[in-house]
Length: 228
Image 1 (cartoon, rainbow, N blue to C red):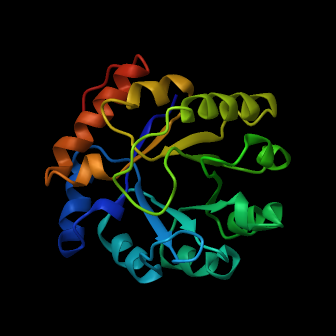
Image 2 (cartoon, rainbow, N blue to C red):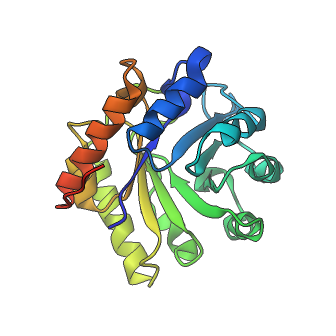
């Protein structure tokens, strides 16, 4: 299991964004998660490629860009040009999902597909061999600080089983929403390898310590002992 912690800048203090992201890196962050919202697909507006470009100048870990927008095809190139190493898109808005995933890969980025809490896992069965990862939303997307939806654990387990059955053992399951010290062991044991955490890492003003604590708990849940 290749566990990765992905602090989400959605919960960061944007007046201190560079400092907070670098603190998370020092704490062992493996990715930086960037939530892009358009005010249409979700009821919030966040950031665009310019912030991704700025982050790319200071971080050494990959930028994991999550497009919570109605027309992701229109903006994929802009985010990859800005420095996104990973781009995930929602199955709920894409009638030609295979084509979009192929376009992301053609640009040299890793391609992910996202499932909202009420979206059934069967909706991705025809692209299981095309994805590099599947992102399971364990809260309703749009705002940080929400409570983890318990049934997400079974969804993680189901998606992991589907990927393995399709022969795509290298594709990771990512989980986003309510990940903290109380929920991390559940999601790791269910099969999640990429853990997105926003409020837990950034809300206390101690991103380095929080990232380190979450990573340690995740490794413990996976039965891994590591010094970092």
